[in-house]
View 1 (cartoon, rainbow, N blue to C red):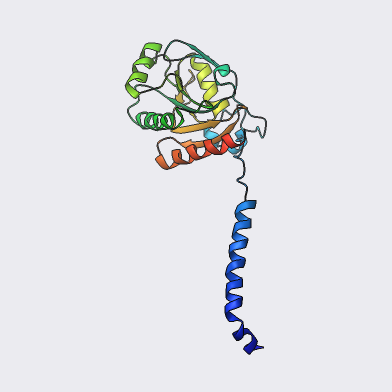
View 2: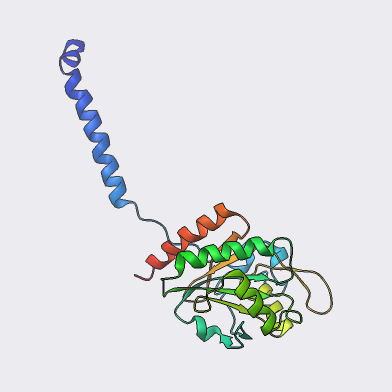
Length: 222
């Protein structure tokens, strides 16, 4: 028996290699990238979620909204109808994480500038400071493409509720006037107004993942 195996050693070696190649090819063909998860309030850091919905396990979507952008235009959920978009919360006078977040949003803007399916949405957490004129100055300074990226201001309570009851990305500062401690989080929203990912907006690596996930999400609509 040993002599038999020695005689056909080369044959079995080639057979083993070919079998490995065939298995790898079949694995690649059959391997299907899983869809992105749908984020629910009960699966997100509780400090970012309003206490009234922390228990919610399914059917979470972004609420209707009505805000004003850097050009004085009214921006609603209809503006983002049938769009994939990235949302964040910032303020123009921030000197810490916001400039980094804005740079990363600008990076995303450049990647999607020719993609009609994808947009950006940045909400001011200090709407009393960030007037339309202030947002416009900031937009010009930061190279915002008005066709792709809306910087919005409006009613403070509405923005607070969007941050903590819809996008689930901002902490409460426990003040009585709907105070928000903005965070570095970016939220990826699908065409059904569901959260499909949350990313660190000051981490280039995390934003790399976001850009990759946009491509994955687009495939779900092909």
